[in-house]
Image (cartoon, rainbow, N blue to C red):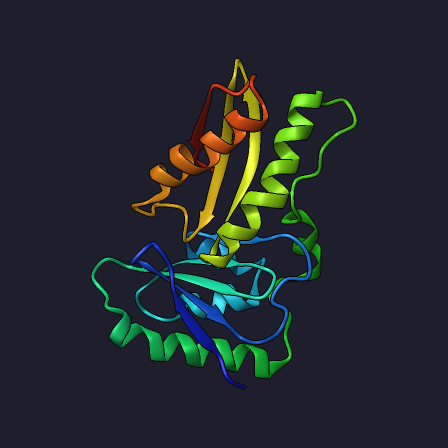
Length: 188
């Protein structure tokens, strides 16, 4: 098994590409070992590596966030070993019961046309680009002209996330949906 790595815009995170599906649907984020323990054998294994501060699972990638005191030079080899050991064990990345809970949020039948347009733009134009950088972004709500979004994985805490929200996503949403006045990040 060969696992590729890619830099992300966030220097505290590194994207690992195992060359196979990690999660068939949705994404999952774990900010500590306790949240991963019952839900994800893969994330649990990664948190046993000293210096791992966060784990994000995407369709075909894993983003690992390191503690500030660690360097990628020393952390990368044990993280690669943990990922390889997990996939060679044959275990799933997520326990079956928890896999449903992390699927992408679905639109309900009662939402407004504006919210449908926002969701479509986020799904088709924003999420694929953000996934390339090892993260995810999901719609939270739309109130009084403000779109609230959740940033996950390498996007959470990234130095360039504010610029991405304001210069990229906000400008695009304003262009296509005049009712949008601002975009803000919310903590998941």
